[in-house]
Length: 323
Image 1 (cartoon, rainbow, N blue to C red):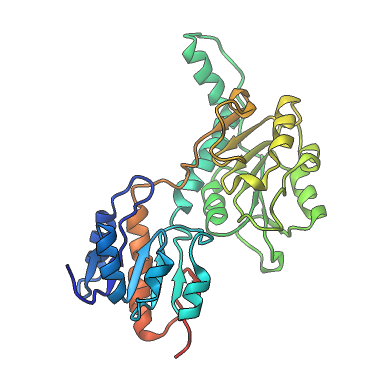
Image 2 (tube, rainbow, N blue to C red):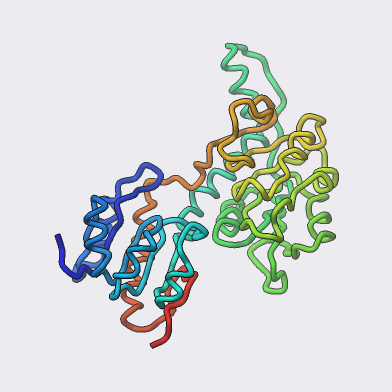
């Protein structure tokens, strides 16, 4: 067991991936640093005390009182609402997250869901289950308008993958004056949202959940969307009003929805969304990828070097206390 390790990898994994693999990815990138994997609670207590960098889902606040060398906590999740941020701030410890590493997988899944509805592949799957060789009419994605709500790493990855499909794209972002990769960029104002939705065959939700976006897509928005519109939610369940969505799907106010996130989550077995043929549901797996640790290790390794130079950390959500 290493004494005064540079980086400590905590034992709790994510997405069924081994933390040993994560530690190995860090060792490959930082051959001159000591990377220790804490496999037990006791090892975590001993190693965190002497670590300069700790990485994992979260860390027990009690351990921080003894972690006098700690400069950086690298969270392995994109969200940090479960992390003791106040405790880190009091001790001047920087915090980074895993934002962006899930973007390729989530974007690919979003595009896949759009294509499923464009070509009505879900109807083909249903007929296969019944061994029914009977033709049905498919559509085309070509010449459609796709609105992407949120132009962060996920939204940008979605737009990038839409190139070549001959579609018009509208991006929704907090600062539309900055422009973006879409053909048109608008803000989150109600009038702008409704104008974009009214022209869209597909609406892809890829924005963070916050006070502004909670319930962003509700009864009024579904009434605005064309009846052949499809909603794809890759972000967080509460951004969409679930009751309004169920009503819109049942009454054919919109053509369909593809949800990787729901509200509530997990979705109860008796929830009506499960039984709606025009609703596709996956259990929050859009970001799952075997390259999770590879991409995260790139960020963390670069940030270890930046600690020495004093540069701003990549994916920084809490800055270190100035010397």
